[in-house]
Length: 306
Image 1 (cartoon, rainbow, N blue to C red):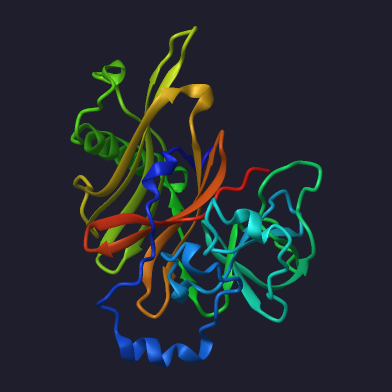
Image 2: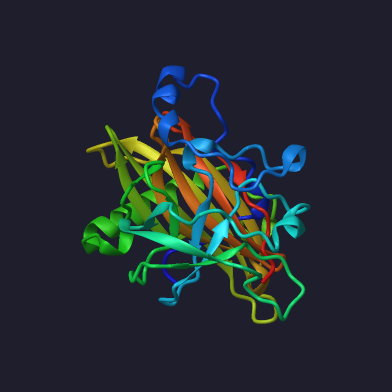
């Protein structure tokens, strides 16, 4: 499916960390809209969540459903059991809803008591019902905490520009350190999906680049998740600011969906929101731009297993 990226769960080391250099005066100016965590787990909580992104995040159930998952960012895999019957205090809050195209709607959420799925022994986020009728939103944040960064897909470009971008990305992938799996060496790279956006004087690309070994008995695939930057108005290669590589059997590969790109908090730090699906479950992650040409994954959620 177009727009799906593949990347190992392990790369999502904590993101949106509170930077020591943040302007304290700006933080003070924003204090009037800051909110306490909706559910604090004390010393066992996921402390890497940046409160500037808000106290809670919404995840769409998809397929036009009005059901939402209410993501408690402080939860960890070991504390998910503690929140299974929690009703988050989200009533009265206004959420802004986003997808890869930007902000699409605003809504309120009515929390629902109990688990999303009571027929299975599994971990889920608390659930709610949204008042939004928009069918295509992916993730939501409390109003005033993030701003949208609209993404352009390589598929929307004129064919000549699309081909040029794909060729540039394949060349960039070829400059990365050699894979430890000799199976894929000397195989050609192919751009499976790519999204671009502009930050001031630089263009940024997020790409899923693959190499495949089409053996009938054991088809294998290697994925590179790559984020690169280059000065606006140039056609050269992108300078790699972040990449991860994973390879394995095609049917067991982890699938990562790019949900949205955002500017977070007063500092307006660019961040990418992703959902990572594997055999173990689904985990959310964020990748943040920490400086010119530098990106790193910093926050990851707990797994949900239903």
